[in-house]
Length: 96
Image 1 (cartoon, rainbow, N blue to C red):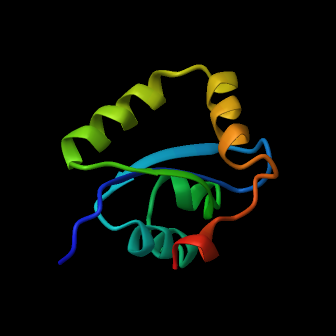
Image 2: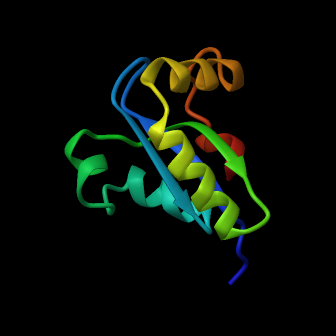
């Protein structure tokens, strides 16, 4: 299987609940969120809209970045999202 480590953020709406995750297959993982196959927090809050992602050269780097982003204050996360995706568009079609 082709590995492409990535960090991503999904939400349910603009300025809604945010979830930061890490994966080795972004398309598969977001599809799982969209199909509600990912139990837990994302299913509970219907988080399936991909609004941010970044690729990394290794899973170690991706996990390190995920942990860093999870420690950030919410307004820092919002600023990061809006610099990357000012209109909070669902980026699903950009990755498939």
